[in-house]
Image (tube, rainbow, N blue to C red; front, side):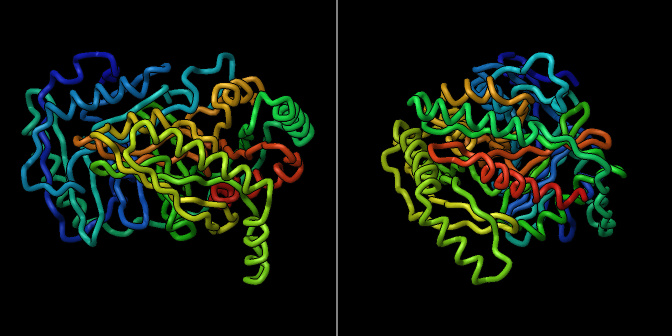
Length: 445
């Protein structure tokens, strides 16, 4: 089917019918294994979702992509007929994400072909596991909407009930690696950024690296997500496969924003160190991180900026205490942030206001983005950008697409970055980036 552009009125002109039921046993995994594009997977410690097939597809590009997707989503959901008894967790959602920058880079050998500035789809098939229950949701469109939704529901209800556990494939293995930039060029890039910080043009900029690896065997991204669930159960595990080729996936510790009603939850996540070989060393590293003037300064810049970005929308903003977030290979400074909105807002309005946070962009935002564009020799694509879902009420959750990779055929490109502030050391920042590659690299080697 042709994608429905965010600025096209045809989005809301087609009948959309949803059906749903609870299934006694089942797992979202067969939906991913069917490889019916587009495909989306989303998992947290409380919810797992698999979605495939596009009943409707919305794409947008440029600086208006957030507003265009929001407009298209509202028109689409206005036309959607949903059974009254279907719980909120099982109701249809739009799944997808955005590119980091508002425009493509020209002339790049980019792995992001097929990933527009924004892409979301209303799935034909959605399986949701939450609160110990599994729900199957199907959606049809057009003249045969009801028939198609009913047929999909019957077919997949039986298929999921009879599904056996998926075999666990071994990691594909890595034959070769190509880094962009080299460590020598990285030192130059950080040095140039520090000159802008010293001149007062920048307070902080996040510079990223890309690691392209050649794989020995075919890659099963759903299997990677299963393994990531064991190592990173409290991260947002995600996967988006557009209609054409390529798959973006990761396990990110960073939530950009979650909206339910008028309650907004987000966080500042910046400042990093490694994990210790012993519990005592782990505690020592965490204490050192909490006392690090450089890391605390970087973290506070992020927390203050997020508060400032939320204040125009909020009647109140509450900042939590600074803590240490421990992951398998790295520790981060983390501050939770909660806001109560002054009026109803759509989650995509908040996504637009918050992206990119200084944790992945910098301050001031315009100068940081200009520095990133002028410095990085690769296309960020959807790396470090919002990925998640939105529902008919305008609620939703979006994570920041870090600790991530994009795979195509037997090639995967991993991305990771480091925040550059006054007193940053290029070699230390290089080492930090290598730690951030580990979640994805461990699942490929």
